[in-house]
Length: 239
Image (cartoon, rainbow, N blue to C red; front, side):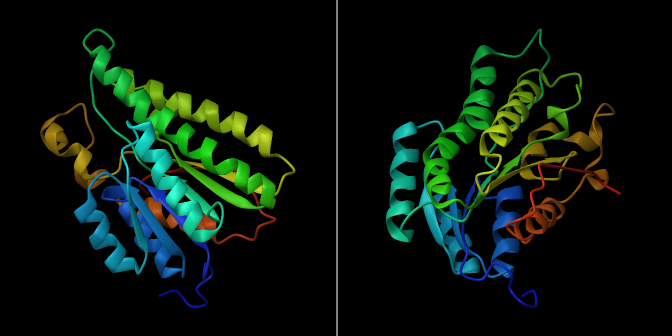
C-alpha cells in the first residue's frame, strides 16, 4: 500500500473492471485506499476483484441500458449519492478498414466506447454538480487523436469520446467537478489476443506496448491531485 493512502474513504466507480486496464486501475486505486466499485459483465471476475480490493461489484452490460441504470441506482443508494471518482474504462476494440468494417461492429464500438460513457456520466454527473465536487476520468486512446489504417470503428468512437470530453470540460468549468481524458498508446491487454500483433508487421509487438499498470499509474496520479487541481488531458506512451 502507498504511504498515506491518499484516497482513503473515497468511493470510486470503475467500468470495465473485469480485466485489462480497468482491473489494473481498480487495484491501483485500492492501494491508495479507495473504496472500489468495479462494474462489468463478468460476475466471477468482479467477485475476484472485490476480494482483491476489499471493494464491491456491479454486474452490468453497457449495451443494456436497464442493467446500467439498475447498477448505478444500487451504487448511489448504498453510498448515499454519486461516487467521488468515476473512471470510464470499459471498451471494445477491433481492426477493420472503412471498406470492410461491418455496420454491427461499428455500432457496437459507438455503443460501448462512447454511448456507454455517456450513460454513466449522464447518471452520475448531476449528483457531482449538486455536491460541487467529483472527478470523472475517461479512458481514450491514441486512436482518438491520430488516424491509423484499419481503425474505422474504433478510432471514430474514440474521436467521439474526445469530443464529448471537451464539451464536458466546458460545462463543468467552475463547478468544482473535474474531468480528465487519458489517452494511452497501444496497451498490452487481452483485446489483442485474437489479432496476434507479434506476427503482423503493421502492428506493434506486444513487447513494445504499454502495460495496463502504466495506464493505472496515470489515473492514480490524476486521482490523487488536490481537488483544486484540474488535469484536462494526459497523453501517455511507452518510453
